[in-house]
Image 1 (spheres, rainbow, N blue to C red):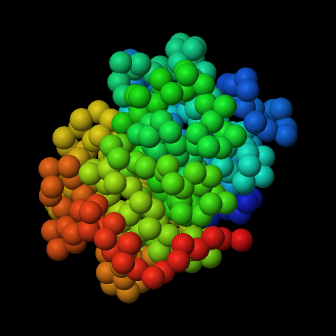
Image 2: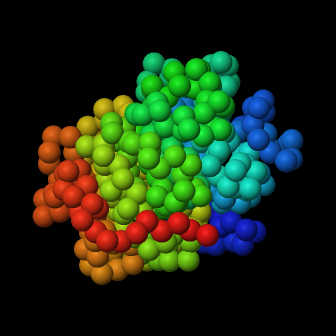
Length: 345
């Protein structure tokens, strides 16, 4: 099935994106404790398959200006697409703008509040609570899910910040079940104005998929998604730079949506066929479906890497870039460079 979707900011765009096998229904529920100037958007929109049974949970986090009423214009298509691949997909509508949540630094808390609320009210949506969780987000939302992964893998993350006191024991317990995150056009995690605890930002175990595009040149600093990818030391990590894709690709076309779902299914659910979609080279695989940027294109890793899939079994696809999967060699490159970390104004 293909879906017609609309773009954000009240502008309509024609786009087609591949749906999964399930038809979808959605509902909006109030979530106490969410952060929003407008009380009506202290809610979460939940989409799930229109079918009998229960399904694994995949949390979605929106970008700046993407909550509230703008969510339906900018993200409803992607959320429904993810649900069509067999997930219950809750998305908080709060933190409409980054300014509501400490320049987006606290957006990860909205995700955790939503998750723990659903755990306390397990019958609100048909979640299979025996299955691990996964999470994805766009822009600020991508930053939020990367922070979730860092908090999961390094409990000391954020301890030196005021945010630490807001992370409850229930939230930490919920994070144990988080088994995969997807960062779609993420914010620069090396920027202290966006990542409040860079020294303790360590993702050592959680599988991570970083998505960017060679057309993302007016929001994303050049090469920042690749730098985010290099900051991740998890042995299971994937990077793709999609030719021509701009920062609003997830809002307008979300052609990467199926692969967000496949990555989540591969690592949260152990789906072998889904893993082949990410790491394989056959028809329908990630590198055969999405157009890869060319060497030297904007946002390519080290001016040459448009796609790299690293695995804990020490394999890399393509093998020619395997050295970028070796965290020791990555650290050596970073340590030997004279380039300074850019702090964005």
